[in-house]
Image 1 (spheres, rainbow, N blue to C red):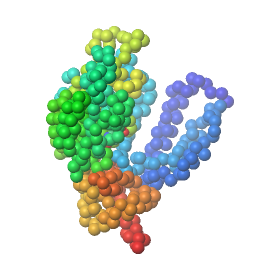
Image 2 (image 1 turned 180 degrees about the vertical axis):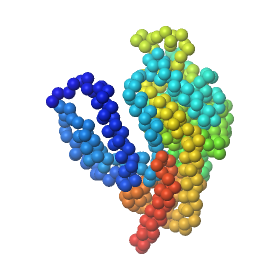
Image 3 (image 1 turned 90 degrees about the vertical axis):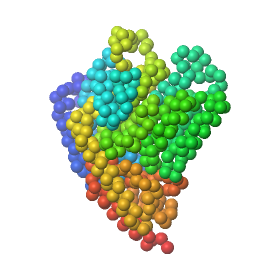
Image 4 (image 1 turned 45 degrees about the vertical axis):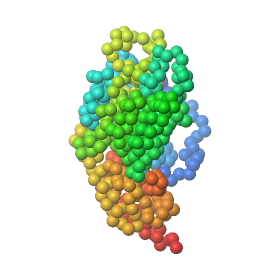
Length: 486
Ligand SMILES: *Cc1c(COP(=O)(O)O)cnc(C)c1O
């Protein structure tokens, strides 16, 4: 049997097979609750089930779906399982996934405005919508010198912000000596609890990991603003250039909020770029109750980013990043070789998003955000976040009321960090047993030196009863653990 190349793009075949695949996904969602959250396979098992060479002849969709069930599903940790409480859930929704499918179906590249005007303009528009929904300051809107764009991840967004900051501090574009000018180092600041992507960006941007100052924390896990002010003053005195400050709103370990207004004062005094990383917590700014805490100081930020793929029902990958002034970003990243030159770009009235990012090519990611916002609506998105925070508050209450457990820090939005009072070994053993047992998955962190279990509520399918079941599992395993220790 040979395969007609045209069949690879045949509308009728696609129509039929597409329905089968959508059905397969819907069946998978229905079966999720009966599956163990964490994959139970041994290393190498998945590959041992696959043939060593790709097929010469076409196979059927049925054959592929058969292996999806047989090989792939057992090798998955089910991130959309309602009992997934580890890390930060990467939630999804039907509308977002349909948007993703439409994006693939259209198969356009949005590197320049002219390569698909709708790809650029829908993105600009949806990011302005989001700006309003979150209550972000107007300086981030596209009608100003700033504006927003979608990136794959918070790590990429932060890298681009850092490159823009480096550009602003060195004026590399007009400075022939580049970064080597006069032995002054660019310095990056973030707290000890900041995401590792800050140090990674310093490595990639050429600033160097050794020039990242990790500022100490107070007991709540927030950056100490006085220590930051001292470090920046010392560096400036030593002839260095304080270049970039990353404030975290909702740290990865325990959801702490850095004091952005105070951090902004030091940044402004030294002319350093202020970036706010609100990757997880940012989504909660759509709720008026949580907005003031999340957006405090945002009016002083040069860039502000969050992940709709963490807590706003948009499937991975989707990071939204806004700049107050896009000039240095574009100066740092623009490249217009002859083959990309076009009248629209030259006339200057359009945005070419490839000037805002590392790659040239660009997916039509705005579609999944657009479908999510339109088909779910702001009210339901707020309702979900409110529910998750309420359930986390209940869970924290149960922890506090149980003499075997305690909270390692106050809950932050939908994140609870807790431990067994019996000590680190007891907590590690409990986490291990919980995750092997199958119906829930938690992760861990260290907060103020103390090991803790983390319960992060954010899954689309998670309901209050799953949070209750998580607590029942934890308490019953803790009870048997007590009996088995001498
Ligand atoms: C999750 C997270 C990140 C990294 O997110 P990616 O999108 O995977 O790069 C960065 N910062 C914070 C605070 C996070 O919670």
